[in-house]
Length: 108
Image 1 (cartoon, one colour):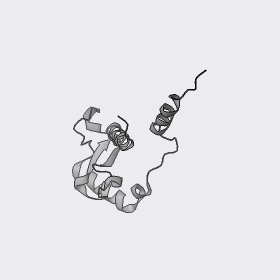
Image 2 (tube, rainbow, N blue to C red):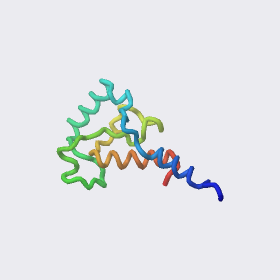
Image 3 (cartoon, one colour):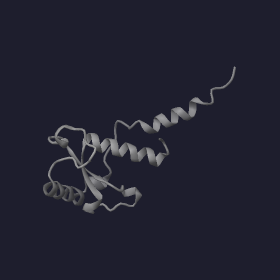
Image 4 (spheres, rainbow, N blue to C red):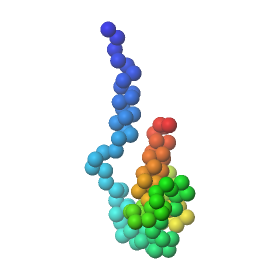
C-alpha cells in the first residue's frame, strides 16, 4: 500500500490558517501612545467603519471600531500616521487582516 504524501502539506496549511484561541494583541497596541492616538482619531472621524466595502448595517455603528494599518507595521507602515490608519468594524478588520496574512503566507 502506498504512503499518503499529499495529506501532510494540506494539514500544515490548515494549521497556519486557524487562529489560536489564546491570541493576544501585540504589545504596541496596548501602549498608551497607540490608545491615545486611536481615541483622537475616533473623536475626529467618528465611530464608523471607513472600509468602502463595509456590509455592516450603518457602517459598523454600535460595534467595536479597530484602528487598522493600511500598510501593516511588519511591512513598513508607520504606527501613528493618520494617513496609514483606517477605522474598521470587526467584520471588515477581520477580513482585511485575513487577506493580508494569506498574501504574506502565499495562500490564495
